[in-house]
Image 1: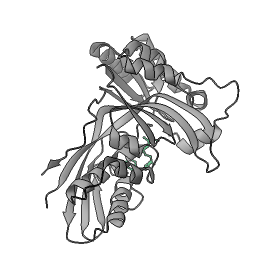
Image 2: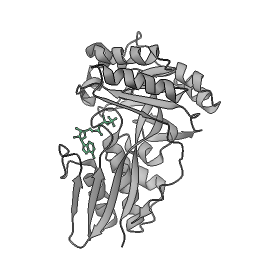
Image 3: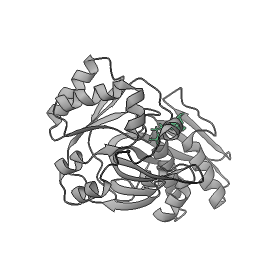
Amino acid sequence: MKSIKLRAMAKINLSLDVVGERPDGYHDLRMVMQSVRLCDQISVSPTRAPGVRMKSNLHCLPLGGSNLAVKAAELIMEECGIRSGVFIDLEKNIPVAAGLAGGSSDAAAVLVAMNLLFELGLSEEKLRELGVRLGADVPFCIMRGTALAEGIGEILTPLPALPDCSILLAKPDIHVSTKDVFGALKLSEKTVHPDTDGQVEAVREGDLAGTARLCGNVLESVTEVRYPVIGAIKQTMKARGALAAMMSGSGPTVFGIFEEKSRAEEAADALRKGSDASYVCVTRPYHSRSSHSGTAG
Ligand code: ATP
């Protein structure tokens, strides 16, 4: 049996709305999700010894049962009664705890890789059902592309690809806990909700400017107030021509949408020269929603 190599794409939220709180502690969300080309590389190989082992270029990452890639492999092994073991090699490029769903995307890639490696024949829908047990963003990370995500993030409606553009990512050197951000969010009549339906319409019409104009993230009301550096990064991007600049997920990464790559690069240079962001990269939307084919190696 050969190893399977896959890319695990990062995501940004073009919009993120919290529409209700659920008795189980989760929130009901409406989000427009977009995969970007920034990715981790994952290789999954079969081993004779049972169990899951992994290595990563990022030494601070846990490599045991708390790693989402390991959890994904263990889940599918238990679910499908796989007795042999696997070795996961994770090349981490997506910043950790950044609001870019890096861990969720790794988990998604491992589910897909295991399905291919052991020829399990699981449908994408079944993989998404397994994925949501690992995290609310995992189903989207399996589907990829552009989508409206509802429920806790698992009810997905695919959308047409975003027109090509450059996406600048900038992460300040702060740690933001997703749980704390949701915990601190107080929904009231004063909450300004993004126009998700309007943005979905703009995406369907292939209207990049309209999509950008309707970017909105309810969680900024918590995170941007606590961390003014997020607002400062947004200003830098907007001053250099971003159609939109907004925080992704619960932060702290800020993304900017640019029509021209040269302007995104200029803004990236400005951020690299300053001290607001510790990680800066220019990427593009990832378009294909075609199933992960994987490379056998
Ligand atoms: P989201 O956007 O879904 O909220 P995130 O981008 O904010 O996710 P991750 O990078 O997925 O956050 O990491 C969140 C936590 O998960 C970190 O504390 C990290 O230690 C842990 N973790 C477990 N497995 C992984 C993995 N494979 N890659 C990154 N982080 C992982």
